[in-house]
Image 1 (tube, helix red, strand yellow):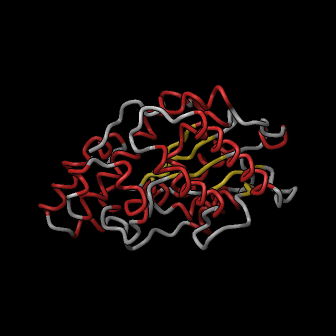
Image 2: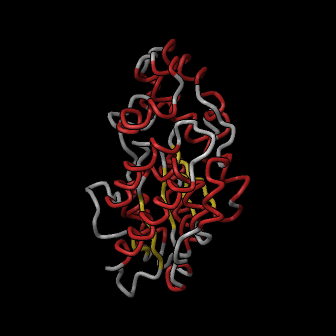
Length: 275
């Protein structure tokens, strides 16, 4: 299914090189807060919640509130650096750091003074979590998770299309679509959780989509506290959180299909409280 070992070893050069110029004090003291997930998790609602709390997530966004410049960063670097190679060479790391520095500068150039926090929402940032963490000591990560059985039947399979061949073993790539999808969900989310829980401490927050739907105010309150946001999270949640009809769609699938999904993704389904 892919390996969970050496999740941060390829990034040994990042800590040595670091950003050519450290984040300005005004930026390091106010961010970044980053929202990452596997595709189709419902991160758009979370992006709207944090914006309501005074967090700047950029102006160059798509309709899903994804920061497009960071999306291009993902396009350029994910497959080159997460395909299982033991180490990412220093030249590549230096190029990534220079790229990141330019994007952050451009991203924050239009930040209004009243937006006291900053960050971005680009779900695929989850693939480069160890890199971002090593590059920016003030980095905080919101790991958004939705039940992988639902995700297997999402219309949004862009991450599988773009990165499946880079992160999944060949035998998995020969499975049917939903089985490939949940294999990717299992691997990517477990890698993120294992890295963040062992390395990031209180700079890591995991949020389940289902919890946001069942307890919008309470979940929003935890996000606001984690990112040091302002305003009433309950009001923001009431305005933004509307559970979709697709919630729990896996329950209408054939039992044999669900059983196969659960066999593949049992580690993550169990770890995140779905089994």
